[in-house]
Image (cartoon, rainbow, N blue to C red; front, side):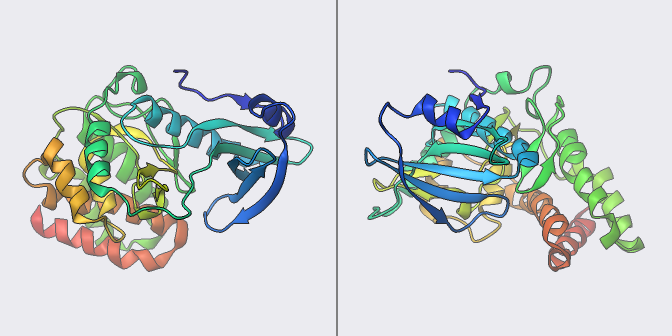
Length: 304
């Protein structure tokens, strides 16, 4: 399987490549949601459907990263994610585009969370060497966490990767929010992060932004992962993200642990993984996330 999806020079070129002869778009409808891009459902003359995202030409990097991330997830053959039909830019329409498989959600069954838990554990056990040449943690290139840039410089150990490529860049971006007392807590945490985090038994490919809005349930009850921020890291970072904004049903976590039991002390490390995402939200959406960041800094200030 080719890891990097095909890039096209126009919408017309993409359509001609993946649509059958005499098949065209019959209807286009706008779909709500998404912070970065416009989303559309396309109904074709043969009755099938496609999912299309549009953005400005300058933001083609969003779609290149999303396509590469989805391709990396698909290559594990462990979990469902939509097929990529292509991405590119269209100079005539002055847009960047991404075409994906349509996930039918109408008349869907209840989500099979037990199956998803087993699949997620298998996904986290998949081989990762292809994605981190010369190291163990990181990814082939930098990408995005929502609209925020995500640094994926390869490292040999997880603890330094999480400190140098996750927390430090976010703290630097958010520097204007912090007072002198906050900065003391930040420096102390970064200096002692090895007293909290542990090295995993093996590296795992991560979705990277695995909260409830980035999973979908199909008509058959299967759970699909979408909108990834892929990198190779510690599996518990993905699990922590599932618990940050609401969480998933308990049967998912129980099924996951049947395949991959969590290492002792996960609950003590979980908020440190949350801190990365809360800092990203602070940088993207503003001061309302500041109290949550400070609570976590104060927590680890007392622990360390």
